[in-house]
Image (cartoon, rainbow, N blue to C red; front, side, top):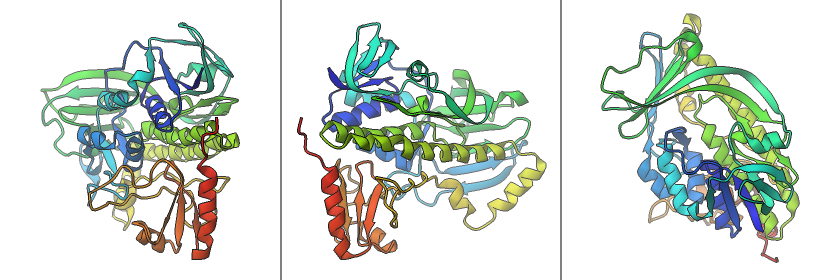
Length: 439
């Protein structure tokens, strides 16, 4: 019997497995396909999500296969630039670029270097039980099941979980091409056109992506000649969230739990946030901690996922701009602070709850500071940690008027101390969450 079986060996499932493995959990991944998918899908993560990759052990290798994306252009139907937003720095507060472009098969190879020996390829799940899963290769017994099997999740359907719809679906086509100097500027171009909304960008190397809404007709590509189409796929972009993310010992994560429009580049990012949130709680429960901690997974991530989808819908509104709306966009882009807001995506703060206090910084992601040797993968470590004014975090703490912060294993601030005397409370809570394996 394994402790956790993960259904699906895409990036979300592999990250769940990697994080669990780093926590000493016996984990197995089952994947119905015979091997990794070789064509591009996700192409972007933000700086916060790059730290999830850091936590699973591939942070520095991810830097080597990705590139920082320098900004955003809003473009009119004829190609005129309505607004351009560029970044001043290539590295954000988390130690990674605020936006990174990459080729998904390259990322999956990095993740498989970490967890490939735990993946069983060509195994199809045929049933879901509270003791594990049934497959066409035999039963897999496990304490917990994590379903990362995509938007058409078999596990979600088998459990009879419906979805809450947040908006109308849209039909788009995604075209991935290879060529030389097809798009000179390295940022993302959003074509604001009510009739033919589109997005195009350079990804990495000779790879480019072009997306367009099909109900308005296919627009002319932003390049001429010299391009080889690698993949062309029709997609229905949906905005929906599963009504339940957990049934007993079975959890949904990634697209199995939520789908949103791609306009803020958070499809994969939302799934990796799920992975980070759930994995440390599973480790806690499996190592003798209170299993009630698992009840916070849906309540924390569900609200965040909805707010992220709403943000994407706002950008989608801008893409469908007619002349009047484009004029509003031009004017708004000149306002102070708009450029920074357009380029900086931060996950919404977690609402107060059992694992989030009501003090300053609580529910926010902890930044990462450099050391004399550069950015480190181990500044906080895999266990709850208290940082105080004697740490590299002193400036960040002082800016919020607090003396110390308790950081969860997923890098979220659980609580802060407003006085030196109150720090004892944080240490006691950290000790409570740092369970000792008493199996």
